[in-house]
Length: 103
Image: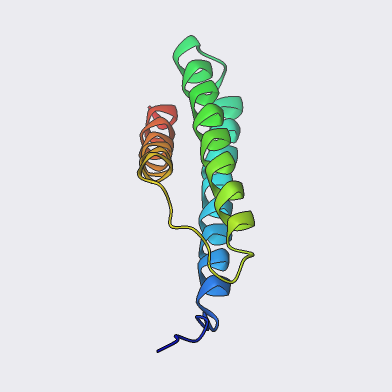
């Protein structure tokens, strides 16, 4: 009994688009943190929070880019636990640093 090749349909494309939407949302959060810091004055804590926001954004961007390029195959490899944890940690960090820049 032979099994036919997997037909992924549009699932990889939907996943790729979801990663791009999330990357766009993270970019907006990082840019708003920079904008808030510039408009409220450059305090030490504000600059530190913005620097950490940009670092978290770059980390998420690296994971997302790796995942989006990996989705180009007919049978993409599953997201590794390390990359999933990195993406989640960067997302939470962006939220926390965004709140810190407001106060």
